[in-house]
Image 1: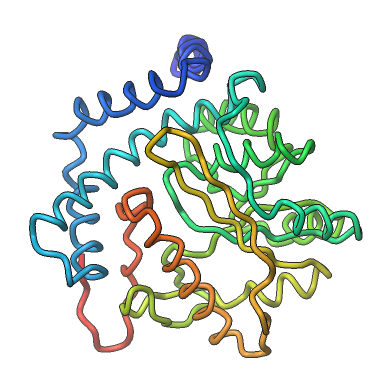
Image 2: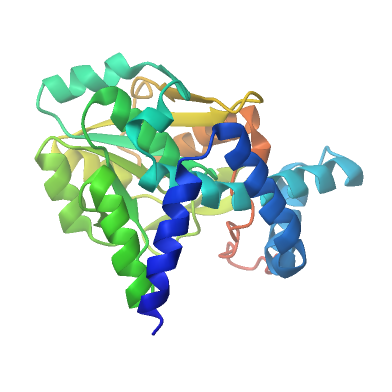
Length: 292
């Protein structure tokens, strides 16, 4: 019975994905207003993160940033539907892409490319827009859903635009795709309890994955930073940068710290579009109390 509900959901998703951009964003903001009482837990986590990372803001400014982030998280669900189901014509003119030549050059050499990004609220739409401009799918690394019906729907939708997805912990599939010369979007900015080190993120020690340089080297791939934001006109600015100078350095902890530093710069460009509702600082350094 639950799987049967996917049919009307899929139909509605395809309708939403075709809406004009102002209408889609307005619908997302309205949905956030409706869902606000149900998002208490996420609002609390976002408020703690913002207080930790932006101590220079007063209480009113922090509350405004929390609200913007939570609203964008809900809007991001509608942007996700656009990423999965919008026909190419509905995406025309939605993005300005800078630095795509760095990606094309690497791919022309037959190298896989790890597009290093972060958990912003519209990541998969940025990936879809990049793929449209590139003229080929860009692979994504995802967390599998526990509900089998939803996971089948999600995977079918993603595979249609990105190609088969790569599970978050499926290192073998990641290496295989990179070794085959594929571009793969990857983020390591969530709380990690393994192969991690505590490095600063907005001045707060954050448990961060240290395995990324080794993965890139094992695959013979190249890392390119991949950043994106939604401007006030509803269009997206997507930027691909050259590999950070001196990366990898041979020091996995220093490389993780460099990633967090560069991510922080990108987040500061549009802080309300970052996923502050994630418990980024759940794992604490020895002796430090929990923050959530």
